[in-house]
Amino acid sequence: MWRLLSETGLNEFNQNHLKKRYALAQQLLELLDMGWSESSLKALLSSKNELLDLRVGTVDFMTLWQIEKENLSAKELLGLLVRYLRFPAELSGTILENQTLVNRFSINLAPHDVFWWDLANLVNQAFPNQELVQKGLLARQIHQLRYVISSQQAQYIRHHFGQSQRTDAEALASYLKTTFPWWRRFSYRLSYSARLHNKIKLSDGKKQYPSGYPSVNIKVLINFHTEFILDSQGNFLNEVDTQAITENGVVNGASFNYGRPNKRHWELDVNPVSPHDPNFRRQMKKGFKAPNRSHRRQANYSHSYFNPQGFYAENGCSNYQLVKQATRHFAKLLRRSN
Image 1 (tube, rainbow, N blue to C red):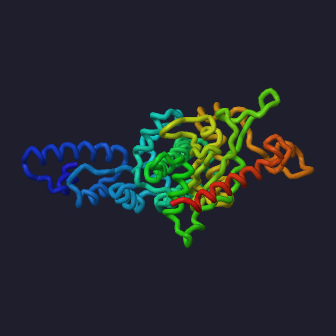
Image 2: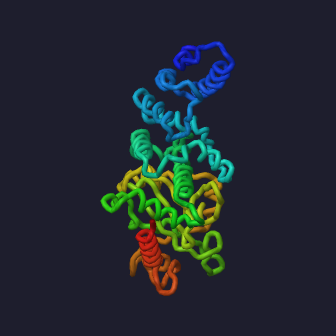
């Protein structure tokens, strides 16, 4: 500890230096206890003599993160991250818990930041094949972290682009237009299927929409990893949120993707839902089903995403057609955005 503090240059015997050394010593003890190495802290302190801003995504955090990457395995580094976030063994789904977790990330950590690519690659390395589906605390925490990440990314959009009473959809359109000029427009996609994010249930022979209102939900993906889900009213849908927890958000919300659009997406993002989803989401999802992918003359076509007269259809349009219409509406909003 004293070797670390000697790196700061706070060596004068006066009240100001003593206070700074005491505060910094407390922070360093906490970091060492969480598993950050003395060597990484020493490297950072060689240019710092004050409390560190170690919210995930800050310059201080990234300095430590890059040093630890050289010495730890992918699984060890992910374990360090969840300990540092003080991530619970099971998300409770409360606003206060989620606000606390999201506040441990920098508000300036953007959805397109390379840190998210880095994190996804680490999960790919740490959990090959079907390992993320297996029982284990770290696997469960890493799966549930996807929901907190999506909440953090939604909050970034609201904070930086949600001025003047904009809806979430308007703020997202402004972010995409500002961040991705025409020559980078292929960094995001509006065309991926939103089938799994349009769950409803049948109750007493009638459709029951989550949150009690009809909604056609669309999906926006950035580099496949970052996912936003928007409802028909222009609201972000998230399993956990810093502003409000809604049934539609819990049932149909966004989740960060660790995988790529191949079998790794199923192994890292889809299959772990069954063994590792938090209990509050399991309970709220009961009875809600996504449309299936059956085509005409196939079994259970009445519940198909593509059936214009089926259970998920409205006014002669299939759920697939309704999503396409809503996506085109968002694309127009995007073109008009400034």
